[in-house]
Image (tube, rainbow, N blue to C red; front, side, top):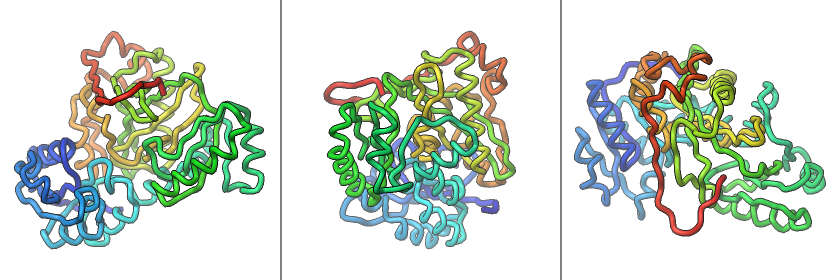
Length: 371
């Protein structure tokens, strides 16, 4: 995807992330446009935008997921670039292609990277073939008839996961292998209902794991840096409740191992722009890549909601770097940490050097669990 200078950016999102993108666009001297549903017409993001373009749908979510309408409206408004933020269409390869086909710059990774890292089965194969560790698993597509037999051979407890989607939908922990057949049926039904894709795989469930995410930034020339990690292990129904950076549970050597692995995966995938690589870390070793992502669950293919926790430890604006990369297709590396944490020796000194310890949490009803 070639670079081309642009003077205006349309934000295809709402809420806090839309405000962040519009503020960054203004700092960079760009005109900020926003596509919005009627219910958001008085929102801070719409008031902040230089121009607001209304999109239509029976519900706000349906409007923000209508890629065809958004591309058409952006093109009619003369937008030269489009930033999807996170969620909604940020992980839709077809949407990214449509934006480029309409003559605009898509501020995000290549559609090919979105497709690769968005399919957890393909992503698992990809990282395993390149020497990165994954948990023992059985993949239904390899041989559907022997799937249950191969799953039992992995040994319990097992985690059933869908190939597509995220957010905990279609995921099942199976401790009694006699119930595996029934749980597979339920997981497939849920995955098909939410994602339109019932493909599954199982992997050995890691007891009391740590869910670690690493923010990365790359360009089309193969230059990739990471900007440290965040801890996301306290969850409810596989949804993150608390995020903090740095992770309090990693030793200096573990931090180096995880952050360097994240950059290595992004580099191997030819990934550019901003993204997140997600790890499940247990028993003192990297034993699984939760590859949704999104470069996600393995690698998130866009900004994630937690990016502000890691970004707040840096001297740069993470969104600013994603826009600059889309402008020139070369990351500026102005986003170096307050100390040179990307160097392994400095990473080991992180607890002593870090001056900020960002934390965020989501309100939730009911019990929480550690990932």
